[in-house]
Image (cartoon, rainbow, N blue to C red):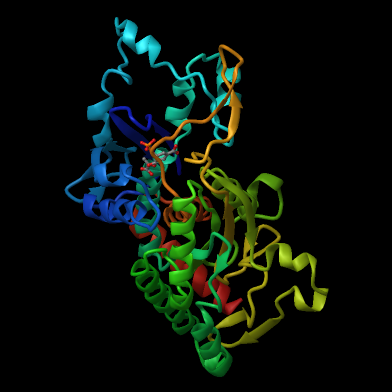
Amino acid sequence: MRYLTAGESHGRALVGIVEGVPSGLRLVAEDIDAALARRQKGYGRGKRMMIERDQVQFLGGVRHGHTTGAPIALLIENRDHQSWQHVMSAEPVDDPELGMRRRTRPRPGHADLSGAIKYGHRDVRDVLERSSARETAMRVAVGAVAKRLLQEVGIDVVGYVRALGGVTAEGDPWADVWAALAQEGAAMDQEAVLRLWREAAARLLERTEASPVRTFDPAKEQAMMATVDRAKAAGDTVGGVIEVVAVGVPVGLGSHVQWDRKLDARLAQAVMSIQAIKGVEFGLGFEAARVFGSAAHDEIFHAPGRGFYRMTNRAGGFEGGMTTGMPIVVRAAMKPIPTLYKPLRSVDLVTKEPFEASVERSDTTAVPAAAVVAEYVVAFEVARALLEAFPADRMAALKQAVDAHRAYARDF
Ligand code: EPS
């Protein structure tokens, strides 16, 4: 499976092509639109989200509610394009006024300056239109196709907010699963354990969905929102930490045998590629560097009917770049959005005069949205790895292969 996206933030539309999706996957626009709506939510978003109402159109690869095996072509229109037709016109525009509106002031923290130098643009709009996080709408749409596929084989992915603007959610949102496993785990079979994780993922999704900041700790919600309010009042922005968990992932996706087949590394690349992400970690992550080895690893147990299992998941679901069968746990740090009302110093591309960045429409934070984006980006990489391990042209064949693999691993 692979995909490409194209399209500018204020251009006519975003487009995407996903290839390698097996035939026979039930897929309707509502599946994707629901995902797109989740991305648009979140406390701290700016005015643009009141303009857009993201909806997907299938241009290929789907017929009568099912994938055909052909490339899936997706389109999301930018409503805001209405106000930008002239500026974003693909055809040459004969208008001296437009030249005056050229943007020559690179904003610190954006791709503006490096992109302008790299591509030789004197108008940073030629950079910022594409570097904009608007592009994540299409990545969510593509990931929503992958997520549908994963659901069919018993894999669920959920993304939520761990910390926002320095306020950290307390506790482990998966504590009830760990408690149940500690009590009855040894007596449970593989299927029951899988069900436990999936039910917990569904509950957590529902809980975080109801939270304006997409977090699981209601005690910290108000403090998180207050931080966003304070930042907004001060013309500033805030970052945060997001977490994505994939449950039901079978053992052995990815491979230790070659560097570019390690699935944790591929996931790290995918998550790092989301706009404004500056750090990625799995399981204990950076904390693992601070503890003794005895507290950094997951001991191995065995029970008939369940196979090999762990009582902890410090590894975040990976050993040797391969899935262990435990949930994948990936966290990412998002920097504060660099479009500030509070000016930062920069230098004009043409005049070389210093200036202080002018006020612009923007979000105060997009951390809750980034949690959704990361969820779908992770879903795509997991689905891709699944299809590498179990190549299939038809969904029925994929399901059969995954079921057989789960039975094999259980009885190994
Ligand atoms: C973004 C700037 C803002 C955000 C945008 C990402 O857009 P605008 O420049 O139109 O005000 O709203 O996010 C989206 C449009 C979106 O769909 O998430 C940026 O510079 O990255």
